[in-house]
Length: 279
Length: 285
Image 1: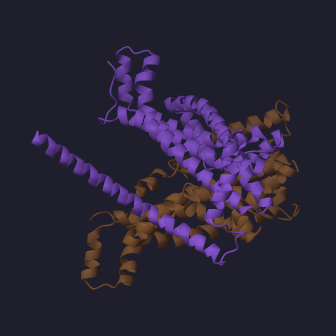
Image 2: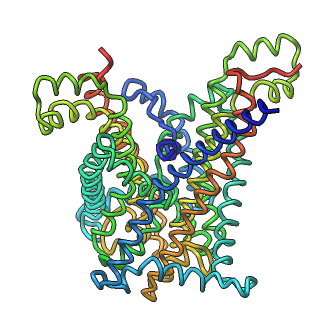
Image 3: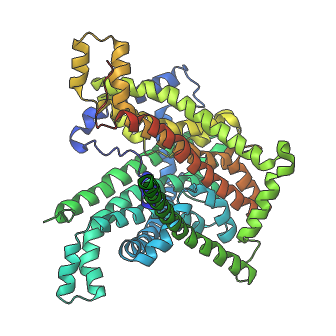
């Protein structure tokens, strides 16, 4: 019953079908054409250049804000770095706790009856709704954003790991146990390798959710740095250049994170280990 | 007659045992939740947690009741917040449907357009809709337009993407067959394209509504002026009113679940499950 609940919350569309580098030139043609059109329209005054600043202006903003002349100096790299640190900390927490919970739920009966109802009541809560509560609990600092990232990613990790354990071949346990493996050995030598590819998949899906949640949480709860903070702060000063720069960075980084970094990791591990196919 | 009565008896017995297992399943489902709530309640009562930061479930319930104000339902604050939120999410969702579904069909049917636009889509798809909020804030200020605009973007891309995938998944032979039999474009759309794309389309709609609802929370926290569940939660923060926050969180989760299961579950049962019950699209005569 609740497994179906978990299943119905499956990830959004995966746009990873686009192969990379080889035809990147041919494929980015439309993007380049749109940018040129935008530039022309902004320069010639067809569109409001305040709300839609020319791409060259946005690029110039990114350039100056990345250098020592930025406000504060080296602002862009600092924002990106801080967002990444928060994201990685939250994801790391989610992977560790999610793996433990997922293995417990997958392997033991009591954990399944205990945790599955709890997960199915916590999962439908929109992640960002926790932000104000966390702000009161921890105050405006990195803990709030990290916990939001954690909540956004952890359910996906648990779900894929439970699915991975259910896909495992029971004979693997029998073999290991009949050869006298202890529980710890079974965990380290049988379960961990078997669920690893699923863990990577869960991480990729979780990172997608976490990235969305992080940006919104930074807009609500960050006090100094982070891409979400940057664009929200810029909206108060009406500096649309900076907002667009932030949106572009968020889009590109999100794409790279989801498709390139974790996609590569996924491809290399699943290819190398082959998702424990039934031999 | 005896045969009938025994038949009835076995049937009743079977019914009783299935309802018994259902009750047992419900109890094992609800028991951990009840235990969790009781534990939370006890922690607060014994003073292990600060009740002003972490109110007990009973306090949340009392606050929810007083916000709901059932004696005077026309001035029920909670219902007004819920109404405002639902209206925004639905308006954004309907707008997104009107734009994304036709566009999705167009992109799904034309290979060239899809190939040209897919890099742009794959860049915009993972972009959080909330990131557009500052632009809307600069352009329109706080208020309805900003919130609905951001939710529109949140719902738009999942619906567009699923529609494209659904249309592209249709076997081209069935289109050829129907066309060679002299179907007009309208027939083709109604008999082949729509039923073929429908499973993907409906899951896209479900996803779009879920995104709209989740984006709404953030958008309302950032841009709402007076009403809405997100606004209620965020405003309660200024008064350290954590009970109200939890009331809002519970409402958000329950309404989200209701939308997903009651509305889209029924929709799926009425269309996809019926049309694809035999594993194929039943053609019309």
